[in-house]
Length: 335
Image 1 (cartoon, helix red, strand yellow):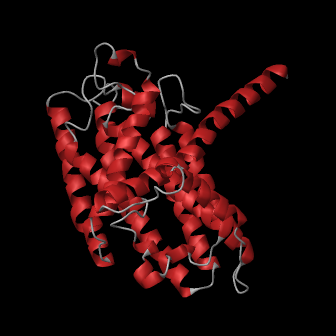
Image 2: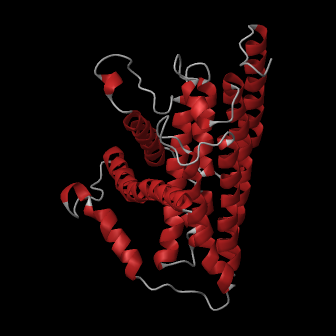
Image 3: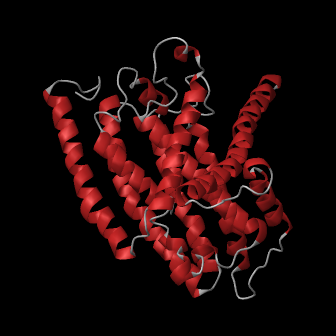
């Protein structure tokens, strides 16, 4: 009995050790996001509240905590309340299988990549619930847009991941990182990395694909009727998903926690430092795209996903499989 209690406390400790820094990171990347926009567009940005604007995220958090939560009288109140909880919970539990190093991962399961796909595909339910339960046409239209968008680009991401799995022969995320000791997959699979990055923007509703939240025609999309901490939970889930996509890009293409320089003193730096640095690099690219690229129309978004990315990723999958088979490079167990 004591042994089981010790195991339970050990797992709770690992969970808190992951979630507390993750929640803190969300506040910091919002600050970083704004600073990048301000730098690109030559505007002041959140640099007035505290040194370098660091207190801006704290001020936003306090604002959400003290704002009144308003539930529309005509809404389905149960689903309306559950929607942001579902969105935030699914965004956070995805991190359970993300390896920060070879030894630090909460759940090092053999089907880690399938777990991520299962959880991320459920994430759309929170958005649909929020849009439908609001009983308002603008949130409902925003949730329908988001559902179509996320489903469309998950198909392309799935095919891209299959390209990586062909080179590794395992669904375990740690094995995917270790398979890149000789060469990161971004080099042989660079076109897939580009498509993955663009698809991740669409998957997380980031500009130029933020059509579910388009202010010009939908006010704020599925979040229109939310306020206070319920809105903040949607916001938290959105940024946690963005960080998750950056982590997946790092694991699949940038070698995860592996150092880019295999010589002293870089080889002495802990793996989690490199992993976090790569996540930040990808996130800065996310922020730059928001500041530079204009918004797509919805028909352009669907055309890009179904008529360009899907056929090209399928073609590259055939090329990758043919190359590995012809040169007898398939991992053991796939030949």
